[in-house]
Image 1 (tube, rainbow, N blue to C red):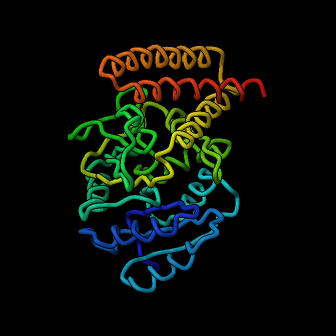
Image 2 (cartoon, helix red, strand yellow):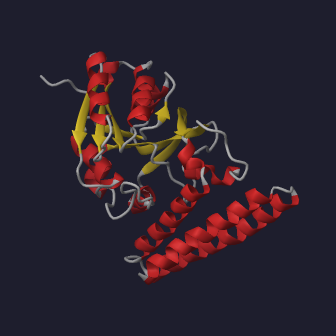
Length: 306
């Protein structure tokens, strides 16, 4: 008889073998009963040692249920959807391949869903961990680009227009059965840094679906040197603008206007933030914030005119 698990941990990965190994080792150091969860690695066309590392981890830790599968359709949304199809548990937890989880982490997620039967999903706290020195132009307001996600120290429903981050989010599997999977036109595809697939998914859910923030489901999201460059931030910003334009192609005029107004307000707020950093003589920080907002518009305008 097949073993029944409560939680399927889905890790989608693309050429991050060394980080994936560290991620798995942190998950193995857990307070949770290993019979309550499984770990599914979805390899999205990696050309490094991802497959070998996953197999070695499974072989060296036979007490854990670890499965490897390959998704050849390039894109994070394709990989996540494959994870949904492979999962056998009623609750699915999505993690990035470059995180570090403390011992209570898995048990926190299991406890939450068992104690909140009406909850459809949730997002955990994410703290950025720099693996290289943080550049002086990297302000607190850019940290969400690197995965930072913190709404305090108490369980709560997400505020309006706020959502979990994809590096640490979970759902009951029935949510996907009722409302569909992640939009494969959105999300990262290899080195292409388009985004917004998570936001689009949450916006598709009706208000009756209760999504909570969990401070105890806490992880560190590791950031390597490559992602601490201005060129990488520019690529992310352009990809974000492109994603906004892609979403608007099928949106109503009202939605397009509302989103445009929201982005305009963000631009105005960025000007004030830049002015504040300028008064503190942090000119590189101010300049980067303004460039970031302009790069989003650049990606948006280019995608709209394509």
